[in-house]
Picture (tube, rainbow, N blue to C red):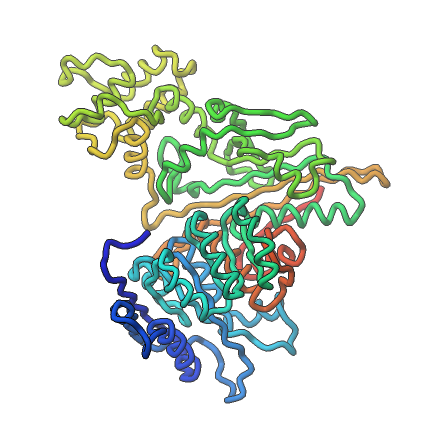
Length: 554
């Protein structure tokens, strides 16, 4: 992650701080101490690594300035990473202490007698401009440039704050967690708690800190909704007979305007690879295994009765059985299933494209030529179309659909037509040259999907999370069906679209940090949000903040 520079020049930019001089002075002093830790003792090389500090325009935060004896506590939070998820997290935390946050903050976290918090957020990114874009217009924030592989600089920043949120790739978390343990600072992430993080548990306990992972959407809100439903049933002496969970990040209906009815908000390679993962689940007491190559073919039609307008389908999502153990229902539930949601028809098209070979990762001889082939050359090779006289070959939807059927890639003409429409939409029949960087069919397809299946600046994405739990009550000999649903759309704010995915990941991770700041989470060590001290207040805050959760019992 290091930049190609001989000297790392960190240039923090403070913007939109409160005009409360004492608060501003405190944060300037903190950042200046980070910037120049060896002011009087530094070596020449250290002197070259000094940070230059710039102070931007000061703005009102909306806080009421009551008196010199203002009881507000000042807290600094460091967010590492300035991707899409960062802005919603930054906005929630920076709003604490403002008039707009007082009601939900007081309702969810404290009694009237407890003091109001005043949170200031530092967003750190490898590229300063990315952090500056995140904090634009958000009071109580600062943008700084930081390379997290520079241990000394990372150590200095973490030492100045109360809480660290890492939105960086999971591979960075252990190094960050080690610094947090050393400095006794809490850490929150939205990433899966893997074995390397679990090994930090004893260190975190000894340091008296909490490392809270899986605090996003999936994983995150899915855990919290599930555990609330399961624990409520167990408290009433109910037995979980079936647990099914469905989640998908998909375009809003208006934005589902291509043959796949799907778009990517990040590099499509990860999502395509996920569609080839094997899956395991339990259905009516029987364990079912699905090979990765058969995953798309295993998709089934899915409807949510309370949302009848959505024509959806569901694919099994990896190993559902691990959630039986995690949620404590593996011994009692005869059905445990977690699935991924897409609009209906997605999987049959993707399965057909996979059989054509456009997701193959092996180097394709055609793409090794110095003279670059066109996308049409590439498609004709996959579909075994004679290209002796390319000028006379018309490779349109009809021809492509015919070849798909002739080669046996699918049996239904309707599906072949849909696949052909997708191929044409992606421009795989065009007479333009393929970039040199594309050496495999998979690379070519990812390149085209990244170009053609992206959201415009005005289009909304959508997040849909739905749990169904069947509970048997032996004492009363009754059975109940409990459902919980989250439906969120991207929101336009100040001319910029904030995606539903960013909201439903960024808000929970910020709530996790907030719960640690106010000491609502007292357990130390490595945690997931599957314990009541996390999920009960977190769900309450999320709903008060505007993320709607619909619950129903039948």
